[in-house]
Length: 136
Image (cartoon, rainbow, N blue to C red):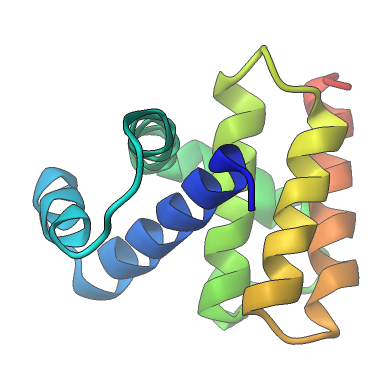
């Protein structure tokens, strides 16, 4: 697995912990990293994604809500919701990675962590968000 995918997975896990436990994001990250050993680049990118997702969570949730017809965010599976949040955070804040790559990475992570039928849902929402942002 590449460093950037590993970083995205780490960001997803921190988002999941932050959402379920609440609290200060810096404490969530500190506790998370105490049990995970990765390289500096991976850790840095994961922290960047996690911070962007937390700092922009209201805007991100609004985008997800707008582009997920007939789904309320709280009714989505927690892993799907947080995969979407991390990917949308990256779409909003990263210019060096093509939107298609960001979406593909999110789908690969969904294949690993989510239910088989979640793939199409996540793809549809992220593609709609990408189009609305005019990226890719």
